[in-house]
Length: 162
Image (cartoon, rainbow, N blue to C red; front, side, top):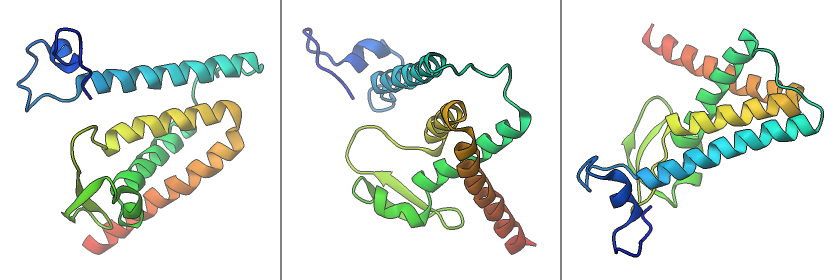
């Protein structure tokens, strides 16, 4: 994502300032935009929670942290890699081949932002944490389904190798 400026250079060129050659440079302006949107969304969730009489917990319980971490991992893999969700990605990607078990390796079509399980994991985690503020029972139930799926995937892979 590069926005033209009055000087005729894109914002990525101005923002990067010698960071890397153009063909090696990640889309820094787009990353900065997504970071700003993520933090604004999280701040908005906290403000909305406070206005509705919900306070942030003193601490996140270890069980919730493991549950949300595992669910975020699984949701990010489900969206970005799993064969069963290839129909969602197909308009935007090109198949490169098989990936891990039940996964595909794909490359984005054209230019623009790249999707990856690491980035999606952050967004999933943010969504689950916001869910804990507003609908903790529903969030824990939904997260437990994804966490159980992650554990099942791990056991499937381990039993194939054992």
